[in-house]
Length: 346
Image 1 (tube, one colour):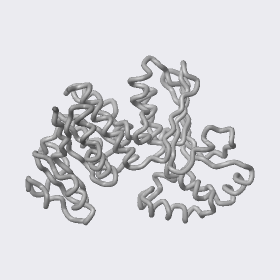
Image 2: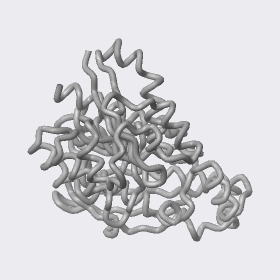
Image 3: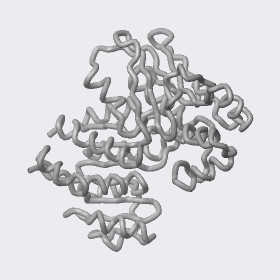
Image 4: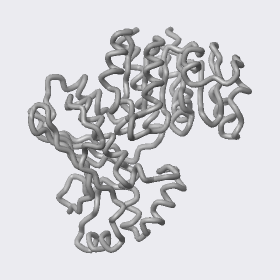
């Protein structure tokens, strides 16, 4: 049986969900893949770090973080104030799993952390779309140079297989267009407004259940969706497209009156992402609220669900729906990446 060591960079909702999933799946992973996972390092900005080459007790780590304590109380190594780069080199792990917050403007500092991890000889799995958008080519080249994997399935639609579908299951296919609802937060907010909430009330409710950050502007102004669309263009279309190049309009100007008018007509407002190939090296992409009727494939994509509809040279319409994902869904996408790296490199 193979024992695989993992370091977790970030131990917020996604990091803790991954820890829970490892515990939940430990028996089936041994039986089906002949592999046992141990977490040898955890690093957070808010709760310090823990390093143990024999494996950290994940239940204890979650208890420590949930109680607001510092992870150093369960760390086998007390190395003072480690920064992230020193942590990456100090913890004895074969994989780094990165789930730090998104920076939609340049992908930092996660981008530099992933470079450090790959250059130190670690496979990297990330749920962060920023490094994919701003560093995909460079990070892929570094990974190839060191014979390591750089995977990022959870970066766009949580655990839904967007990237691996086209990489593995659909070879030699050309994507001509994609249209979708890629930001679950705005979809959720618009749904609450349909039920009678004001814009501010909807945001407050979303914040209460952890759907959005303290500053929700990245979601409501379309930045999160634009970064996701940029990741799709860079990886699947093979054409790097920066978020700032996308014609972007968020949902901030959608009023209760507009919601009611649409509802009375049997229609809904949705934040629609659209990208189409113009020629070999040119894409046109937009993100904007659209009023749609029941004939639209996006009409019944409600709550925190998302949907990507691809148009290819062979398949005129290939849709991937993800219904009401959770942090466990994101964690599963990361676990699937780890398993697929093991299949390829071990």
